[in-house]
Length: 424
Image (cartoon, rainbow, N blue to C red; front, top):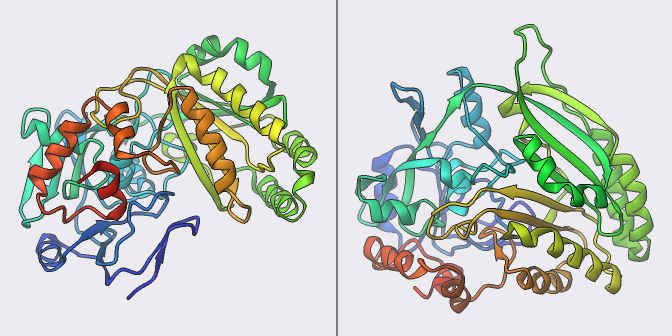
């Protein structure tokens, strides 16, 4: 048995074998010999998506390279590559992703199969950027799917949680390489709330962070810009602030009653105005070195701000010692069967707690508030959905389950959590 844990340390497993196949032959042999199979990327899921007692696969050593289409609008990319490696390789080809999340260690397949997203009112999740898959099914065959080839499989695979097979290559939409300007400043929450639509329309990417006990936000925008070839590279900022933030989190863990006052202090320190410019792939992600646990719900856009206010009011009323800020983002709607955004344009509210502090009681209280706002949880972040909830929230859940049973009738790629969640 080999021990495994996710990034935050809250999910552990003792798989029979952790394997890194190098090619299709090795992968097929491993799948054929295993009873159950799960695939792991960077371990950034907070739910037990990768938990298994049998075979845990990583595609980090799997052969492959990006293949750029003649029109340079799509590429085939190795599914096991990290977003960091992929976006750097795309840049070398003069290409970029239209949008990314705020970290980049995740594997391409992991990010797409869980619906990872960035921010931008007119932009969808990474799942919307996928337009084709090559995956190995339970019998060891490689099947290709896209809008016009095995379309039912494609629709299910666009956000599949790894239930249909092992994705080995993914076709994604790309755009010509571009630079981004990041601006960060402190603003009153009341002003941002009043002008949200205006602010969202003024730039391609907008988000803000707000501590539960503060009335100000850290307001962040990203916007494409033209940059001369001689422009200096972007300089990563915030290391001192991160060290200070960790110290404050440690103090709050030891003396929770100090959380409100220390949050206001941290807000003044973290909200200093800053600007940086650089290649898009270098500006989208930020360092995340302080371990935390996370819950995230996607809500109808109109419900976003009222639900955020309700969550903040609940924390203040209950005096909950929450050390991390809420993160508020926007995303476009989509038509993906199991996407939390398939009901239309959405607002995303992320709720975090320092990993060294108790998180389960607070998450239970926050989930009730977020559900009151008609929210759907991010599949890879903490939630307590039941099978009944899944079918109530997702009209195409039955089609998704049917696809799982068609392509993996023995549920080789399902673990206990996913079997219970989808009733497999």
